[in-house]
Length: 342
Ligand code: AMP
Ligand code: TRP
Image 1 (tube, helix red, strand yellow):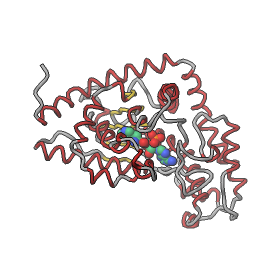
Image 2 (tube, protein in one colour):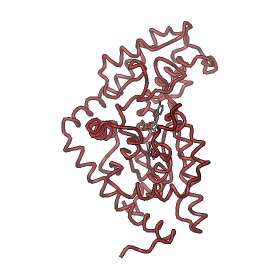
Image 3 (cartoon, protein in one colour):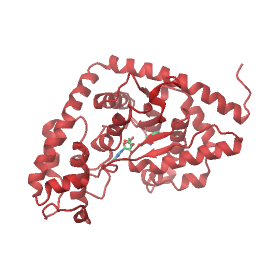
Image 4 (cartoon, rainbow, N blue to C red):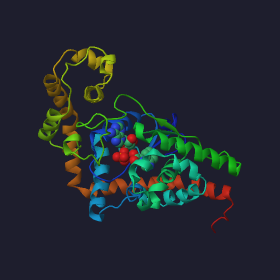
Protein backbone atom coordinates (compact mmCIF):
# COMPACT_ATOMS: atom_id res chain seq x y z
CA UNK A 1 0.00 0.00 0.00
CA UNK A 2 1.62 3.23 -1.04
CA UNK A 3 0.94 6.83 -0.09
CA UNK A 4 -0.68 7.37 -3.46
CA UNK A 5 -3.30 4.72 -2.78
CA UNK A 6 -6.59 6.62 -3.14
CA UNK A 7 -8.06 4.63 -0.25
CA UNK A 8 -5.56 6.22 2.13
CA UNK A 9 -7.19 9.61 1.62
CA UNK A 10 -9.45 9.48 4.64
CA UNK A 11 -6.88 7.85 6.89
CA UNK A 12 -5.72 4.49 8.12
CA UNK A 13 -7.95 2.17 10.10
CA UNK A 14 -6.81 -0.36 12.67
CA UNK A 15 -9.20 -2.63 14.51
CA UNK A 16 -9.08 -6.03 16.14
CA UNK A 17 -11.04 -8.86 17.67
CA UNK A 18 -9.83 -11.33 20.27
CA UNK A 19 -9.91 -15.04 19.43
CA UNK A 20 -11.37 -15.95 22.81
CA UNK A 21 -14.49 -17.86 21.86
CA UNK A 22 -17.18 -17.71 19.25
CA UNK A 23 -17.88 -14.53 17.33
CA UNK A 24 -21.31 -13.18 18.17
CA UNK A 25 -23.89 -10.72 16.93
CA UNK A 26 -22.35 -7.91 19.05
CA UNK A 27 -19.02 -8.36 17.24
CA UNK A 28 -20.81 -8.32 13.91
CA UNK A 29 -23.05 -5.31 14.50
CA UNK A 30 -20.68 -3.34 16.74
CA UNK A 31 -17.52 -3.92 14.73
CA UNK A 32 -17.20 -6.12 11.62
CA UNK A 33 -20.22 -4.72 9.76
CA UNK A 34 -18.78 -1.22 10.10
CA UNK A 35 -15.38 -2.36 8.89
CA UNK A 36 -16.96 -3.75 5.75
CA UNK A 37 -18.65 -0.42 5.13
CA UNK A 38 -15.45 1.59 5.70
CA UNK A 39 -12.99 -0.55 3.74
CA UNK A 40 -13.68 1.29 0.48
CA UNK A 41 -12.62 4.64 1.86
CA UNK A 42 -9.70 3.86 4.15
CA UNK A 43 -6.51 1.92 4.17
CA UNK A 44 -7.39 -0.87 6.62
CA UNK A 45 -5.63 -3.25 8.96
CA UNK A 46 -7.83 -5.85 10.63
CA UNK A 47 -6.19 -8.00 13.24
CA UNK A 48 -6.95 -11.18 15.17
CA UNK A 49 -5.47 -10.09 18.50
CA UNK A 50 -4.14 -13.32 19.97
CA UNK A 51 -1.65 -11.52 22.25
CA UNK A 52 -4.63 -9.85 23.92
CA UNK A 53 -6.44 -13.18 24.20
CA UNK A 54 -3.76 -14.69 26.45
CA UNK A 55 -4.23 -12.02 29.12
CA UNK A 56 -6.57 -14.69 30.44
CA UNK A 57 -5.71 -18.37 30.11
CA UNK A 58 -6.56 -20.01 26.78
CA UNK A 59 -6.55 -23.66 25.87
CA UNK A 60 -3.94 -23.94 23.05
CA UNK A 61 -6.06 -26.03 20.67
CA UNK A 62 -9.10 -23.81 21.21
CA UNK A 63 -6.97 -20.69 20.66
CA UNK A 64 -5.65 -22.02 17.36
CA UNK A 65 -9.16 -22.82 16.18
CA UNK A 66 -10.65 -19.52 17.34
CA UNK A 67 -7.85 -17.57 15.63
CA UNK A 68 -8.75 -19.07 12.25
CA UNK A 69 -12.45 -18.79 13.00
CA UNK A 70 -12.28 -15.05 13.72
CA UNK A 71 -10.36 -14.54 10.47
CA UNK A 72 -12.97 -16.65 8.66
CA UNK A 73 -15.77 -14.61 10.25
CA UNK A 74 -14.24 -11.37 9.03
CA UNK A 75 -13.79 -12.68 5.48
CA UNK A 76 -17.25 -14.28 5.39
CA UNK A 77 -18.79 -10.98 6.52
CA UNK A 78 -17.28 -9.17 3.56
CA UNK A 79 -13.86 -7.97 4.72
CA UNK A 80 -11.74 -8.22 1.58
CA UNK A 81 -8.46 -9.93 2.53
CA UNK A 82 -6.79 -9.04 -0.78
CA UNK A 83 -7.26 -5.29 -0.59
CA UNK A 84 -6.93 -4.90 3.17
CA UNK A 85 -4.38 -6.19 5.61
CA UNK A 86 -5.89 -9.07 7.56
CA UNK A 87 -3.45 -10.72 9.95
CA UNK A 88 -2.68 -12.29 13.30
CA UNK A 89 -1.13 -10.04 15.95
CA UNK A 90 1.56 -12.47 17.14
CA UNK A 91 2.86 -12.77 13.57
CA UNK A 92 4.17 -9.21 13.71
CA UNK A 93 6.67 -8.85 16.57
CA UNK A 94 6.46 -5.05 16.49
CA UNK A 95 3.22 -5.16 18.51
CA UNK A 96 4.96 -6.65 21.54
CA UNK A 97 7.97 -4.40 21.08
CA UNK A 98 6.01 -1.15 20.92
CA UNK A 99 3.80 -2.32 23.80
CA UNK A 100 6.91 -2.46 26.00
CA UNK A 101 7.74 1.12 25.10
CA UNK A 102 4.19 2.13 25.96
CA UNK A 103 4.38 0.28 29.29
CA UNK A 104 7.01 2.92 30.04
CA UNK A 105 4.88 5.81 28.75
CA UNK A 106 1.43 5.10 30.24
CA UNK A 107 1.01 6.08 33.90
CA UNK A 108 -0.37 3.72 36.55
CA UNK A 109 -3.03 6.31 37.28
CA UNK A 110 -4.30 6.08 33.71
CA UNK A 111 -4.50 2.29 33.80
CA UNK A 112 -6.24 2.35 37.16
CA UNK A 113 -9.16 4.16 35.54
CA UNK A 114 -9.81 1.46 32.93
CA UNK A 115 -13.24 -0.01 33.55
CA UNK A 116 -12.66 -3.14 31.47
CA UNK A 117 -9.80 -4.18 33.75
CA UNK A 118 -12.02 -3.71 36.79
CA UNK A 119 -14.78 -5.79 35.15
CA UNK A 120 -12.51 -8.55 33.93
CA UNK A 121 -10.31 -8.81 37.02
CA UNK A 122 -13.39 -8.82 39.24
CA UNK A 123 -12.98 -9.21 42.97
CA UNK A 124 -9.86 -11.31 42.78
CA UNK A 125 -7.55 -8.61 41.43
CA UNK A 126 -4.45 -10.06 43.05
CA UNK A 127 -4.82 -13.06 40.82
CA UNK A 128 -5.29 -11.21 37.51
CA UNK A 129 -2.34 -11.42 35.11
CA UNK A 130 -0.04 -8.43 34.74
CA UNK A 131 -0.88 -8.67 31.03
CA UNK A 132 -4.56 -7.96 31.72
CA UNK A 133 -3.54 -4.78 33.51
CA UNK A 134 -1.36 -3.47 30.66
CA UNK A 135 -3.77 -4.71 27.99
CA UNK A 136 -4.65 -1.13 26.91
CA UNK A 137 -0.97 -0.35 26.29
CA UNK A 138 -0.78 -3.27 23.85
CA UNK A 139 -3.95 -2.02 22.18
CA UNK A 140 -2.36 1.43 21.80
CA UNK A 141 0.68 -0.27 20.27
CA UNK A 142 -1.56 -2.12 17.76
CA UNK A 143 -2.99 1.13 16.48
CA UNK A 144 0.10 3.32 16.64
CA UNK A 145 2.54 0.79 15.16
CA UNK A 146 0.84 1.69 11.87
CA UNK A 147 0.12 5.32 12.73
CA UNK A 148 -3.57 4.40 12.61
CA UNK A 149 -5.89 7.40 12.52
CA UNK A 150 -9.35 5.81 12.89
CA UNK A 151 -10.43 2.94 15.11
CA UNK A 152 -13.91 1.51 14.48
CA UNK A 153 -15.05 -0.31 17.63
CA UNK A 154 -18.07 -0.90 19.83
CA UNK A 155 -18.85 1.50 22.66
CA UNK A 156 -17.03 -0.66 25.23
CA UNK A 157 -13.64 0.09 23.63
CA UNK A 158 -13.94 3.88 23.59
CA UNK A 159 -11.99 4.33 26.82
CA UNK A 160 -9.12 2.23 25.48
CA UNK A 161 -8.87 4.25 22.28
CA UNK A 162 -8.84 7.44 24.34
CA UNK A 163 -5.95 6.01 26.34
CA UNK A 164 -4.13 5.35 23.06
CA UNK A 165 -4.52 9.05 22.26
CA UNK A 166 -3.06 10.00 25.63
CA UNK A 167 -0.12 7.66 25.08
CA UNK A 168 0.51 9.03 21.58
CA UNK A 169 0.41 12.57 22.91
CA UNK A 170 2.72 11.88 25.83
CA UNK A 171 5.21 10.03 23.65
CA UNK A 172 5.28 12.91 21.17
CA UNK A 173 5.71 15.47 23.96
CA UNK A 174 8.34 13.56 25.91
CA UNK A 175 10.43 12.83 22.83
CA UNK A 176 9.83 16.26 21.30
CA UNK A 177 8.59 14.76 18.05
CA UNK A 178 5.40 14.69 16.05
CA UNK A 179 5.58 10.99 15.35
CA UNK A 180 2.17 9.58 16.23
CA UNK A 181 -1.21 10.83 15.05
CA UNK A 182 -3.94 10.95 17.72
CA UNK A 183 -6.27 8.11 16.74
CA UNK A 184 -10.02 8.68 16.76
CA UNK A 185 -12.54 6.11 17.95
CA UNK A 186 -15.26 5.58 15.32
CA UNK A 187 -18.40 4.42 17.05
CA UNK A 188 -21.23 4.59 14.62
CA UNK A 189 -24.74 3.51 13.85
CA UNK A 190 -27.27 1.70 15.96
CA UNK A 191 -26.01 -1.32 17.86
CA UNK A 192 -22.77 0.07 19.21
CA UNK A 193 -23.73 -1.80 22.35
CA UNK A 194 -25.71 -4.97 21.67
CA UNK A 195 -27.17 -6.37 24.89
CA UNK A 196 -27.83 -9.95 26.01
CA UNK A 197 -31.14 -11.38 24.76
CA UNK A 198 -31.80 -12.60 28.31
CA UNK A 199 -31.00 -9.40 30.16
CA UNK A 200 -31.16 -5.97 28.57
CA UNK A 201 -28.79 -4.54 31.17
CA UNK A 202 -25.92 -6.88 30.31
CA UNK A 203 -23.68 -6.57 27.25
CA UNK A 204 -23.83 -9.47 24.81
CA UNK A 205 -20.43 -11.09 25.22
CA UNK A 206 -18.44 -14.25 24.79
CA UNK A 207 -18.67 -14.77 28.54
CA UNK A 208 -22.48 -14.50 28.71
CA UNK A 209 -23.75 -16.94 31.35
CA UNK A 210 -26.77 -18.12 29.34
CA UNK A 211 -26.23 -19.53 25.85
CA UNK A 212 -29.68 -18.19 24.97
CA UNK A 213 -28.45 -14.65 25.59
CA UNK A 214 -25.99 -14.67 22.70
CA UNK A 215 -26.46 -15.22 18.97
CA UNK A 216 -23.25 -16.68 17.58
CA UNK A 217 -22.18 -16.13 14.00
CA UNK A 218 -21.87 -19.91 13.74
CA UNK A 219 -25.47 -20.54 14.92
CA UNK A 220 -27.81 -22.41 12.59
CA UNK A 221 -31.03 -20.76 11.39
CA UNK A 222 -33.00 -22.89 13.87
CA UNK A 223 -30.80 -21.83 16.77
CA UNK A 224 -31.14 -18.16 15.81
CA UNK A 225 -34.93 -18.42 15.61
CA UNK A 226 -35.11 -20.31 18.89
CA UNK A 227 -32.97 -17.77 20.77
CA UNK A 228 -34.97 -14.83 19.45
CA UNK A 229 -38.21 -16.57 20.38
CA UNK A 230 -36.95 -17.05 23.94
CA UNK A 231 -35.58 -13.50 24.27
CA UNK A 232 -36.73 -11.66 27.38
CA UNK A 233 -39.44 -9.05 26.75
CA UNK A 234 -41.93 -7.01 28.74
CA UNK A 235 -45.74 -7.33 28.72
CA UNK A 236 -46.46 -4.22 26.62
CA UNK A 237 -46.94 -3.70 22.91
CA UNK A 238 -44.12 -2.12 20.93
CA UNK A 239 -44.09 1.68 21.29
CA UNK A 240 -44.90 4.20 18.58
CA UNK A 241 -41.93 6.46 19.33
CA UNK A 242 -38.29 6.10 20.34
CA UNK A 243 -39.11 8.00 23.53
CA UNK A 244 -41.50 5.14 24.37
CA UNK A 245 -38.46 2.84 24.73
CA UNK A 246 -37.40 4.65 27.90
CA UNK A 247 -37.09 2.07 30.69
CA UNK A 248 -37.67 -0.80 28.23
CA UNK A 249 -34.13 -2.10 27.74
CA UNK A 250 -35.13 -5.42 26.14
CA UNK A 251 -37.46 -3.83 23.59
CA UNK A 252 -34.84 -1.19 22.79
CA UNK A 253 -32.21 -3.88 22.28
CA UNK A 254 -34.31 -6.03 19.95
CA UNK A 255 -35.39 -3.03 17.89
CA UNK A 256 -31.80 -1.78 17.66
CA UNK A 257 -30.65 -5.18 16.46
CA UNK A 258 -33.42 -5.15 13.87
CA UNK A 259 -32.42 -1.65 12.72
CA UNK A 260 -28.75 -2.62 12.46
CA UNK A 261 -29.50 -5.81 10.54
CA UNK A 262 -31.74 -4.06 8.04
CA UNK A 263 -29.57 -0.96 7.69
CA UNK A 264 -32.16 1.47 9.01
CA UNK A 265 -32.45 3.95 11.85
CA UNK A 266 -34.16 3.20 15.14
CA UNK A 267 -36.85 5.77 14.26
CA UNK A 268 -37.64 3.93 11.04
CA UNK A 269 -38.04 0.51 12.65
CA UNK A 270 -40.05 1.92 15.55
CA UNK A 271 -42.45 3.43 13.00
CA UNK A 272 -42.70 0.08 11.20
CA UNK A 273 -43.34 -2.03 14.30
CA UNK A 274 -45.48 0.38 16.37
CA UNK A 275 -48.26 -1.41 18.24
CA UNK A 276 -47.06 -4.92 17.36
CA UNK A 277 -46.95 -7.74 19.86
CA UNK A 278 -43.52 -9.10 20.64
CA UNK A 279 -44.39 -12.48 19.14
CA UNK A 280 -45.18 -10.87 15.80
CA UNK A 281 -42.07 -8.67 15.85
CA UNK A 282 -39.81 -11.54 16.92
CA UNK A 283 -40.76 -13.52 13.81
CA UNK A 284 -39.79 -10.55 11.61
CA UNK A 285 -36.56 -10.03 13.53
CA UNK A 286 -35.68 -13.72 13.24
CA UNK A 287 -36.16 -13.58 9.46
CA UNK A 288 -33.87 -10.55 9.25
CA UNK A 289 -31.20 -12.20 11.41
CA UNK A 290 -31.27 -15.42 9.42
CA UNK A 291 -31.13 -13.50 6.13
CA UNK A 292 -27.96 -11.69 7.23
CA UNK A 293 -26.20 -14.40 9.23
CA UNK A 294 -27.16 -17.43 7.12
CA UNK A 295 -24.81 -16.73 4.19
CA UNK A 296 -22.03 -15.61 6.56
CA UNK A 297 -22.38 -18.80 8.51
CA UNK A 298 -22.18 -20.92 5.34
CA UNK A 299 -19.04 -19.15 4.13
CA UNK A 300 -17.39 -19.45 7.57
CA UNK A 301 -18.02 -23.19 7.46
CA UNK A 302 -16.53 -23.46 4.00
CA UNK A 303 -13.43 -21.55 5.03
CA UNK A 304 -13.00 -23.58 8.22
CA UNK A 305 -13.01 -26.68 6.03
CA UNK A 306 -10.14 -25.10 4.08
CA UNK A 307 -7.77 -23.80 6.75
CA UNK A 308 -4.97 -23.52 4.17
CA UNK A 309 -6.94 -20.84 2.41
CA UNK A 310 -7.30 -18.86 5.64
CA UNK A 311 -3.61 -19.34 6.48
CA UNK A 312 -2.57 -18.06 3.05
CA UNK A 313 -4.49 -14.83 3.56
CA UNK A 314 -3.03 -14.44 7.05
CA UNK A 315 0.52 -15.03 5.85
CA UNK A 316 0.22 -12.41 3.15
CA UNK A 317 -1.43 -10.01 5.62
CA UNK A 318 1.41 -10.41 8.13
CA UNK A 319 3.98 -9.68 5.42
CA UNK A 320 2.23 -6.48 4.45
CA UNK A 321 1.80 -5.46 8.10
CA UNK A 322 5.50 -6.05 8.85
CA UNK A 323 6.47 -3.84 5.93
CA UNK A 324 4.39 -0.99 7.33
CA UNK A 325 5.49 -1.53 10.94
CA UNK A 326 9.25 -1.73 10.48
CA UNK A 327 9.93 1.93 9.56
CA UNK A 328 7.60 3.19 12.31
CA UNK A 329 9.35 1.13 14.97
CA UNK A 330 12.67 2.39 13.70
CA UNK A 331 11.47 5.98 14.05
CA UNK A 332 10.25 5.27 17.57
CA UNK A 333 13.54 3.69 18.68
CA UNK A 334 15.42 6.54 17.16
CA UNK A 335 13.27 9.13 18.94
CA UNK A 336 13.82 7.33 22.27
CA UNK A 337 17.60 7.28 21.78
CA UNK A 338 18.24 3.59 21.16
CA UNK A 339 21.35 3.00 19.08
CA UNK A 340 20.54 1.97 15.52
CA UNK A 341 20.75 -1.77 14.82
CA UNK A 342 23.73 -2.46 12.63
P1 AMP B 1 -14.01 -8.58 21.51
O1 AMP B 1 -14.93 -9.70 21.22
O2 AMP B 1 -14.07 -8.14 22.94
O3 AMP B 1 -12.63 -8.79 21.01
O4 AMP B 1 -14.58 -7.33 20.69
C1 AMP B 1 -14.35 -7.14 19.33
C2 AMP B 1 -15.13 -5.95 18.80
O5 AMP B 1 -16.54 -6.17 18.93
C3 AMP B 1 -14.85 -4.63 19.54
O6 AMP B 1 -14.86 -3.56 18.60
C4 AMP B 1 -16.01 -4.52 20.49
O7 AMP B 1 -16.29 -3.17 20.83
C5 AMP B 1 -17.15 -5.12 19.66
N1 AMP B 1 -18.18 -5.69 20.55
C6 AMP B 1 -18.05 -6.73 21.41
N2 AMP B 1 -19.19 -6.97 22.06
C7 AMP B 1 -20.09 -6.04 21.61
C8 AMP B 1 -21.48 -5.76 21.90
N3 AMP B 1 -22.18 -6.49 22.77
N4 AMP B 1 -22.06 -4.73 21.25
C9 AMP B 1 -21.37 -3.99 20.33
N5 AMP B 1 -20.07 -4.20 20.02
C10 AMP B 1 -19.43 -5.21 20.65
N1 TRP C 1 -9.55 -4.63 22.96
C1 TRP C 1 -10.40 -4.89 21.83
C2 TRP C 1 -11.62 -5.69 22.28
O1 TRP C 1 -11.57 -6.46 23.19
C3 TRP C 1 -9.67 -5.65 20.75
C4 TRP C 1 -8.52 -4.88 20.23
C5 TRP C 1 -7.19 -5.13 20.45
C6 TRP C 1 -8.57 -3.72 19.42
N2 TRP C 1 -6.43 -4.24 19.82
C7 TRP C 1 -7.20 -3.35 19.17
C8 TRP C 1 -9.60 -2.98 18.87
C9 TRP C 1 -6.88 -2.23 18.43
C10 TRP C 1 -9.26 -1.85 18.12
C11 TRP C 1 -7.92 -1.48 17.91
O2 TRP C 1 -12.63 -5.55 21.70
